[in-house]
Image (cartoon, rainbow, N blue to C red):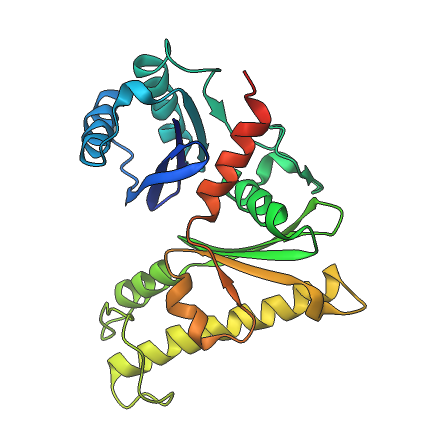
Length: 265
C-alpha cells in the first residue's frame, strides 16, 4: 500500500492507495508543532478506523510547502516504515522525475503541490491546460501541449481574505460563505460579504482563465482545459463560467503517478 501525503500551509491531505485504488483519505489541519511520534499516533489511529494496518504500508511519497513539516514527515517515514518500504521515501521537488518538465526561470521556487497537480491533470488530458487550486492561496498553473509546466499566477485565498476583512476592519465580521446569496446586491453586511466573496472570486477565476488561455493557445483559448481542485473549488464553481471539471483528489492522484514513475522495485 502507498501512503501519499500533501502538506499545505493550512491543511494536510493524505491517502492510502491499494493496487492504484484510493482506499482511504483524510484532510486535517497542518500543525507545525507535530513530532514524528505524534504523526504516528494520529495516522495509525486513522489507519485502524479504515481497516488498514500500518504494516501494510510499503510505499511513501510526500509533497510539502512547509519545510519544517517536511522534515518531520520524513523522520516519521524513516522511523516507522524504513524496513518495509520498496524504495526510499520520495519527496517531490522540481528535480523529481514527474513526467512533466518545469520550464520556469527559477524551478526551485515552484511549489511541489503545483507540480503534482499539473502531473495529474496532464495525465488526464495531454493538452494545454490550467489547474486552479483553491487553497490558502489560489494558484493558477499552466501546462502547455508539450507537457511543460510554464508557470502561472498566485492570489490571496478566500479564507485569508475573509480573515483580513475581519481582522483589519472595525465593523466587518468573520462570516461563513457556504450559503449562496439570494441576490448580488447585498442588503446587509453579511450578504454583501457573501456576494463579494462568491461572485468576486468567481470573476477573478474567469478573468485569469481568459488571459492565461490566450497565452497558452493564441489561436483558440477556448481549447484550453480548466481543472479545479482544493477545498473551496465546489463553493466557487457554480458562479464561474470557465471551470467545468472539479477533482478534489487531484493532488493524491498526481502523487500516485509520480511514485509509480520513481519506484519500480
